[in-house]
Length: 184
Image (cartoon, rainbow, N blue to C red; front, side, top):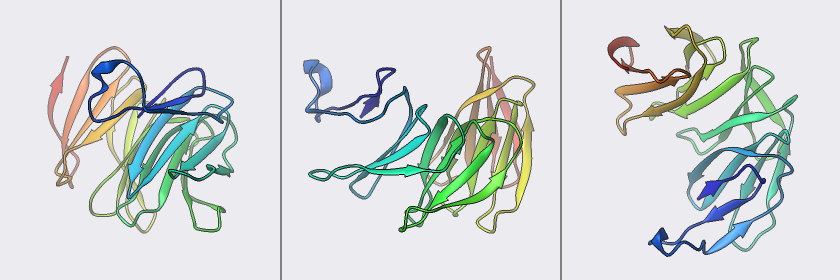
């Protein structure tokens, strides 16, 4: 799946080279900033301030609670969707659709990735990457000096990549958060 500035999401087939998506999901009223997939559910985060959960054949479930743009979404290892927003918060979305603020950083958060141990990594405009433990305790593992715009982790959760504006990527060893390499 890919999200667009037009608020639509294109769902591509197993061979996307044909150039035509299998279907297009519509509903967001702002650019789609993040997508995540878990167990038959596609989650989307958008600048209309919402997270949407899409299941094939059903209307999307609309989750509201952030103040402003929602910039990223991920599924924790327990399947709970979590979002990161311009309001500086990370919010977990329960089955009732009520958000729980699990961390608040005071600066817009741009990037989010779930780690296999139930922790989350979040990156913000302040250039900081923080690890948030399942109990909500946060610790800073990187001060990049430029806004963090993307995060990715390897499957076992032992490496975390943090990309910043300006083109550098920091590779961190987890769980300790030690800087291993910087790619310029």
